[in-house]
Length: 145
Image 1 (cartoon, one colour):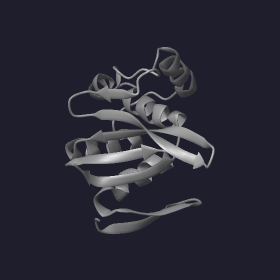
Image 2 (image 1 turned 60 degrees about the vertical axis):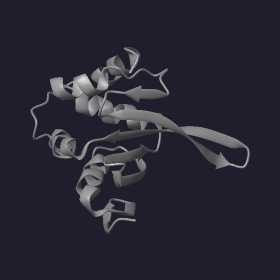
Image 3 (image 1 turned 90 degrees about the vertical axis):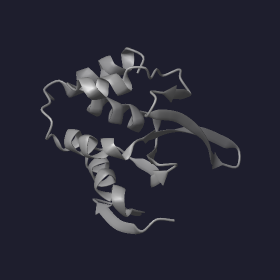
């Protein structure tokens, strides 16, 4: 158990591990829902996303106009249930929705060294062109991401 900090954005409120609270807040501000997170999951940061569309939006926002993040995100396809980019890992957790229904929740781990770059990208401090963001997201998903 890590020291936590309560954060709130709109109607969303949660106790988040202190070291990653700024990251989770920026993810929420980007309209992406998370399900759980951890600042030290075997040495990496862990983020569980509420849905596949939240996960894909996160990858899209990172990969737009960023060679570094395109490199990290390019090998993911909608058919993959496991993705490994050496230091970035993605998998789906089987979660019980109710007694008779299960769903997959995408999860991502990455090294702490990448957290500040992700925050910069999400806050727009890394130059990005969002004029056609919705069209770019459709292209991103249609390309198998």
